[in-house]
Image (cartoon, rainbow, N blue to C red; front, side):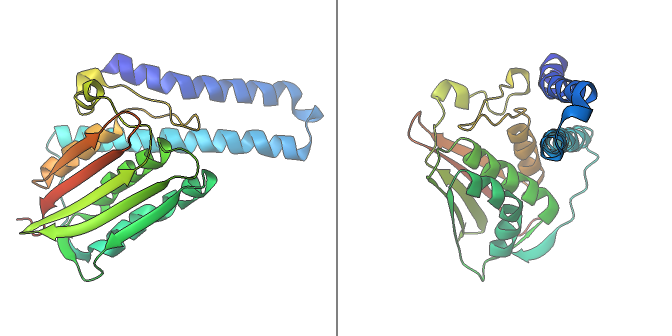
Amino acid sequence: FITILSHDLRSPFQGLLGITKILESNFNSFSDNEKQFYISQINSTLNKLYSFLEQLLLWGKIQKNGLVLNYETCYVNELIAESLSPLTISAEKKKISIELVCDKELVAAVDKERISIVLRNLISNAIKFSPVGSKVSIYGNELNDDLIMAVVDEGVGISEEYINKLFKLDEIISSIGTDGELGSGMGLILCNDILKKHNGKIIVDSKEGKGSTFTITLPKINQ
């Protein structure tokens, strides 16, 4: 596990070191636009690293049983929309349309902050592995006493062998997205653990080249 984490942290740091070396050596010869470009690259990489470390810290807290969930009743449609909002720029960059289908009156008692982390991870992955011009659909509904949320994409899909490794800590595999996006492989493991804390689960339905569906099931009212 430590070896995998070290590898995933090493690559972005190598990129940062390369960019800062270029800036140090050529700062005075660069135009303002060139400087702005390199600074934006540094900022983007640092934001991704910070997000990864936050996920890692939260996952560690769960392992130590130190995570206390803060349940509150919310409208599911609003929860999904709020989780989706930070990802719209990534979708627009790849010309991916986002469809949200959820009854506006559907409510559930969840830890909004933690379920938002799950939704952002799943939606981000859907965008990451979808081709330019495709569609990502997000559904919210209820079945008996359960809340069901699903993220469906038209992307590259996942092999059966890989599906079986998605939630295994000792077999973390990070994949490159359709536009070269990088990932740590930790996101789905964190999602799975958050859902377990909610007495919920996640189901993956996917085939290579046929897209993927990640379905969350959790009680509408948690105790």
